[in-house]
Amino acid sequence: MEYVVAAVILLVVLVAGAVGLMVPRMRRRELPPPTGGGTTTLERPVSEEEPPAEVDEGLPPVLVEPQPEIETPEPTAGRLVRLRARLARSQSSLGRGLLSVLSRDHLDEDAWEEIEDSLITADVGVEATQVLVARLRERVRVLGTRTVAEVRAQLAEELTAALEPDMDRSLRTTPHDGRPAVVLVVGVNGAGKTTTCGKIGRVLVADGRTVLFGAADTFRAAAAEQLATWGERVGAETVRGPEGGDPASVAFDAVKRGIDTGIDTVLIDTAGRLQNKVGLMDELGKVKRVVEKHGPVDETLLILDATTGQNGLEQARVFTEVVDVTGVVLTKLDGTAKGGIVIAVQRKLGIPVKLVGLGEGPDDLAPFEPAAFVEALLGSDG
Image 1 (cartoon, rainbow, N blue to C red):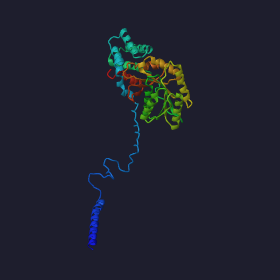
Image 2: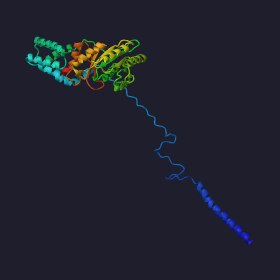
Image 3: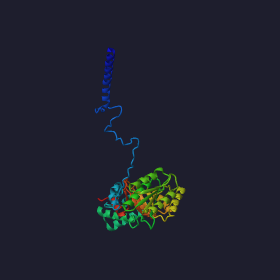
């Protein structure tokens, strides 16, 4: 009996011990996770720098291409007057030099030869210089003027007359019924043709025209990209073809695109041509013939580098024979004493200078105004 009682007591003790051990474990399992600065192995707290859980970090970021800002070119009216400072070097070498000689008390043969040399050096040309000097000599003889102001006025009148102010210098860029005006831009390599084509587009946009570019210079890798950049800046489309492709095909497509989209003026940039390369010149003629399947070319502008001097006259002559040049754009007149080339081009070829480039800025291309040009050349102080 005693053994039975002892066994029962032992069993009760063992059961009580087991229950005592289990209760703390159960309580620990019911405790909430710690809220202090530590982490558990089950989850990691989200830091403030990390993205929210709903963002899928595996997706690549979306790249938004910035839209080019559309520029507003400055008005062309009076632009040449505003750019007169660009002619500072020409002014000192030509204008002031002529005024200095003409203002002497006595003009002997040596003085007139000095005047002739100044004009020829400025690329006025021998024939034009002889005419200009003869007229000046007659005026000085008849009027007997000697003050700087009087001589300056006479010189300004004669230079302006030599620039033939009555020539039509308007750009034919008005669209026709159902199709745009077409302007063909031609010239030799190195004259700044593609850049000037882009600037001409800005001139037209400034005057209220809508413009489309045709990148028909398919042989110079950077030409189409360069022209497209000019177009983007003024919101103009550029039609281009594959590198080394048919220039005439690109020109044709550009005019067709201009017709389809109702553009005012299509500007076609052609490859730089060497005037002594007959095959290349023939190809330029082909570009014009293909474009004319849509209608006549309204304007053919020849880009001439003013610093090439009398050689530019030969370039102009050959281009005129191939594509019937209607106007000249003289580039790089800034910082050169060769402003007289304007007179030489017009007198020799009968082609008006319509635009002049007087700097590197995008709007440093101005409609040519003979009186304003002479005023800039001579300077305001006489």
